[in-house]
Image (cartoon, rainbow over all chains, first blue to last red):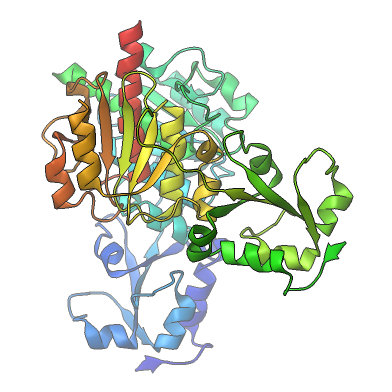
Length: 259
Length: 259
C-alpha cells in the first residue's frame, strides 16, 4: 500500500520530526539517504523506514529488516530535507548517554559552547570521532544535534561518538575538574600555544561560538586558554577548523608518546 | 535618486554578477554586508557601491568614497544573497595574481583540487591566510572563488591571500617542483603521518575533493602522500578540516624551528 495522503499519521509524524520541538517531544530523529541509513549502528534503534515509490522500484529493499512505509514520490519530497531526495529515510530513536564511564583510557573530551551553525557542529562531531575523542559535550544553547543538517555533516559519526547535549558548562566543568581532567580552551587571547602544553594527560578541549568565541564566564572556568597562532591577516578561524587543529594536536602528542 | 526599476542597468548588472557567467564576463564580483565591505583592502578596487534606501536612512554613508547607487529595499532584497540583507553591497574588480614572486620566504602553498562546497573553499582560504601561507592554487574544476558563499566563508581572507584559479595541476605541480618545492598530499592511503616529515622546507600542501579525495592522476604527481591519523570510526575528515590540520602542522614545525 502506498501512502498518498498528507493526513496519514506517519507523514504527519515525519513532518513533525523536521522540527526541533517534534524531535524532542518524541525522542526521535530522521536519517536520510541510503548511505547514512546503512551506517546506523547497533546502539541506535531504527523505529521505521520510509521509502518513496520510485526507490522501491529501483532498489532491493528486502535487506531492510524494519517496519517500513512506502509513500508517493511527491509526499517523500515533502518529507525530505535535501535538494535531490534519494527516496529513503529512517526514523531513529535518540540515544541517551550516561556522563560516567565514557572514557576508555586517558580522557579526551570536546566541549562546545553555543555552536550555532549545523555544519560546524556536525563537522566537530566528525572530527572528534576521527581524533579518537571519548565524547563531545554541548552547552544548552548549541544547535540541536538531531537537526538534519548536523546529522548529515557528521557523515555517520553521530552513530560512533557519544554526544551529550544540554549541559550546564558550569556544572560539567566542575565535575570534570574534580575527576582530574584539565580544561583547555581555544581563545584568541590565549597566552600559550597548544604545542607548549602536555595534552597527553586527561583533558577536555573547549570551543566557543563561531562569531563571538567562548563566553567570558566559561573562559574563566578553563585551566588555561590556548592560542592558535595567527600568522597572516585573518582575525580568527572557523570554529570547526579551530576545533580540528586542537583535537589533532592532541592526536599528534599521543601518537608521539606511543612511539 | 532612488532606483526602483528592475530594468535599470545597474540592477541588471548586479543580478548578472550573481551568476558565475556574469562574474567572469565582467571580471567583477559582489561583496555584501557592512563589515565585509569595510574590509576590502587596497589591492582590490571597488567599482561602485549599492545601498538600500533604508540603509542610507539609518547609516552615515558619507564615509564611502566611491560611486554609489541607492535602490529601493525591495530591489535590494532581489540583489542580495543573504536571508537578512543589511542593505549594502560593493561591486569589486577581480584581481589577477602573477604566479611568480608569491613567496616571501620559505614557500608555503595550498593547492586545492575539485573543491565543490563553497563553505569548504572559503574556509580553506581563511585557514591558509591564518596559517601564513603564501597563496592558494585552485584546479579548474573548483567552485568559483567569487561565488558569494565562498566570499562570505573566507571572512575577509579573500582580500589577504592570493588565490590563483583555473590551474592545470599537472603544469602547476611541474612548475613548483622545478622550483624546489615539495608537494605533500593529504591522502587516506598515505604512508607517513605529517608529524614525521620536515615541513619547514619549501612546500605545497595538496587537498582533494570532499567526496572522493584527490584524483589518482594528481596523487601520483605528489612527492609524498600524507595520512592524517584516523583513530576513531570516522572514515575521513571534512576537506577544510583536513586542510586546516595539515596547514597548522606546517605552522607548528615552523614556529618550533624559530624557537
